[in-house]
Length: 373
Image (tube, rainbow, N blue to C red; front, side):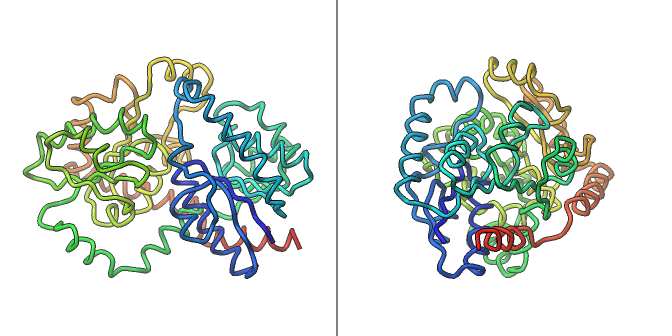
């Protein structure tokens, strides 16, 4: 079978890569082409666009890059028709991928969508589109199946893919000692700084995160989780002369040795919880993007941990609250307040049980290959 796979961000790239690995076990002659990143490329996908040219955040930023996005859409449609895939697998990235789903449906190509657009938070009008143009939607949050059932759409929930990815990593326990030695870590507790993967969010978040370094640089080792879609100089231009380690594409190894983490909202909040690391979540966007979001988004929390648990488990500092004083206050809690730390870790265990068990990618692969045959 020939599969066209599209992921627009690092998390989607990783989810897609695990799925592709499992599809190859079910369909040894499978061929893959599409939009993605390093993880998908390592699984043998022939990339025609890399995620470093795709990821834009915020309403204003998307408008600013609209010409590029439209050109990518046009190219993608042409490339799909040239490739003649048996199926298209779309991972997250809804603004782009739902348009491709409509196009594929029009041309009678099977569409499998991985990671639901957050229609339960905003843009509920997309529900009708999903019901019409997607052959099967695979959701990754436990409450989403019931949500779609209320709208007469049957979806598949086989657990969260992060359970597979974290479990796969933890089987390689020898990584911990090697990682500590390779980067000369271990003498002091490590603090992970996860500023996101997209250019705009890193420029907004990292300057706020590194302010804590100035006060606690002698007590902790601060390490930035870098992504290969950005250069070392890109990060150094933000941190200046500060002696902060920047380690690329090693987020799991970093979380595995960290005592605490300062995390930009997104998939990373859930990954941090699955590694049992106390965290504070922070997020800042342009003022206009934030005001628009307030108007159209209908959820109380932005971190996946809090959304799934339906309460505040980890502190969220947004926009004007994402400032030095409040960030320092919360940082000291997740480092020194043992009662608070233990409470958060206990909540993490409940979160893990809500997500189910590992095996998401394998079950998805089995469904897709069987459905196509």
